[in-house]
Image (cartoon, rainbow, N blue to C red; front, side):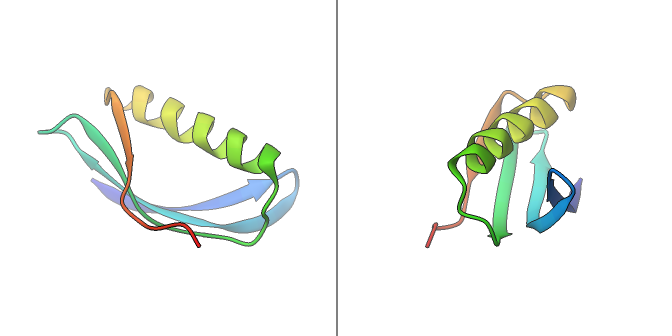
Length: 69
């Protein structure tokens, strides 16, 4: 399963995250992210949301495969 998620912060569109679920390895893979807001609050909320999404899909690990700028 793979999909691209639009990211909203409040009512503002701030970017997207390209994800993939690898069920065989029990991993939620974040292949790329384009975020136009450098807020620490956004970063913490996004990490928490990605973990919750992985957990919803029965996955226990979130891996970021991209290098942050």
